[in-house]
Amino acid sequence: MPKKLNRLLITGASGALGSHCRKHLKGIAHIIRVTDKLKLRASETNQSEEIMSCDLSNYEAVLEVTKGCDGILHFGGQATEADWNTVRDSNIEGLYNLYETARINGCKRIFFASSIHAIGFHPLTKTIDDEAAIRPDTLYGASKAFGEALARMYFEKFGIETACVRIASCQPTPQNYRMLATWFSYNDLVELVKSVFQVPILGCPIIYGVSNNDRKWANNDAVKFLGWSPSDNANDYREKIAQEMEEPASTSDDFNFIGGPFVSFDIMKNTE
Image (cartoon, helix red, strand yellow):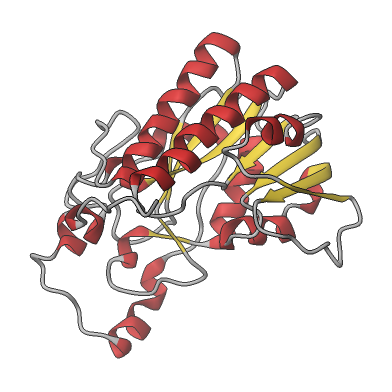
């Protein structure tokens, strides 16, 4: 049996992915510490859970929340496109705070929720792998590309291993035609998280967070050593989607780019 983590930190634990993993990763660590800048309720089923409030842009708060953690599942930060101030504080300052405090506190393994929007301008008509060039489609996507670079630096300089997971459309079920290619099921996400924290040697790989869909554009051969094999297929929902909506034109961004409509977003103005 793989060795359990002592304490796994889940950031962004109030979000959809964080809250789902919070419920389904109980056996992965002796203690699961959950954090968010939003208030979290105590778990009704997990007595070995710790709750701490934390804004990732607050270095001292992040320093405290990463203490004693030997693994970090990082979903925290801005989860979609926003103005620069929001993206900067959450995904640039916040991620630096996470890695620097992980280094100080001796945490050596991180699951970083990157995004396909770091490579959003690649076409959906060809297969790409871990060597694909960075082609962000938004400020949000650029912040995730920064995160991947930061993770690599902390691996090379300090040996902190990171799975940079370019998450696609992680939803309970695919919601539209685009997701027939980009869907990443909750089940496949949880199994990937388990593999990342249980494999003896991780390194700093790029992983595409996408299920075993018929429409394939991502090649994960470089991470076969994880023993992770996604099992769900968006095509199982194709008939249901067809009943609910018309298929977009083949010339739409949904079919031309991995980032879908994000490639056409304008720069948002700062709200402060």
